[in-house]
Image 1: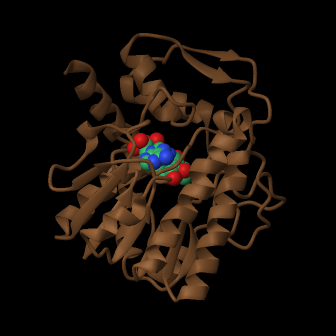
Image 2: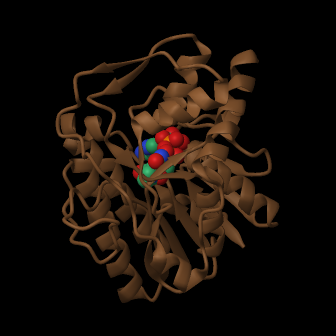
Length: 306
Ligand SMILES: NC(=O)c1ccc[n+]([C@@H]2O[C@H](COP(=O)([O-])OP(=O)(O)OC[C@H]3O[C@@H](n4cnc5c(N)ncnc54)[C@H](O)[C@@H]3O)[C@@H](O)[C@H]2O)c1
């Protein structure tokens, strides 16, 4: 297949590109390198350094793509609060721009990276299933909900298959530790610099941490699945304090950490119900949090030495 991956120079997108290349697909990447890096990119992929809001249709003059896998986004929740117009421009209008080009050129399938951490807000029931009300608590969450709605609508109107993957907190090699997301890579970096790991509030807030290789596997299964929306997580809640304990066990010593003021508006709990994706496409996470942290830490150790 000829596959166009947006955000293919970023953390998750670059791993997906690797897997698609390995499966023998012809992979093309659109990325403006705002947070991604060419160093992440598989050399077998052809890259167009451009904004998803630019003239995407011009890319179809050379190539007919079978599928678009859309991972490019403004991913910072705080940026979305400070500049909701920028967030909406990238995450909503950028998606519409891709969809318009996709249906005009007969793209058969559209895969989208949505956020199970952002679209539901603070629901009443946990773990959160796909049928829970969509009640985002940030402009970022609203932009993901809006993009999802556009994708379903375009899918229905133009007969294009779509798979919406609502990720929980993804972690692993290549995650940028400078962003607000990615507490595991932030802690790995702090430990390697002998710095103190800072914990917002009491550290009891929980997330559902899913390893990037498992997310890649979902993107491989999504090449064939029928149109649907799936949570992609582990169904397991891990607190920030648990993460510190796991790092301490790994190092054989207590990780230096301190508690600072809680972040205003931070969701205290998030864990996804992943039964639907298992029953429909037999996806399930395979890497547990301890093994995932070992793999991630090894990567950051290697990078810090080079
Ligand atoms: N990391 C997570 O835990 C997580 C959780 C839920 C959903 N997601 C979603 O997964 C996708 C990938 O996230 P990530 O963590 O790999 O982030 P990332 O920042 O590493 O990747 C995003 C990529 O998109 C590119 N990009 C940004 N704006 C662009 C634009 N206007 N035009 C072209 N390229 C642009 C960036 O340069 C980068 O390479 C995003 O859609 C994000 O919302 C991530």
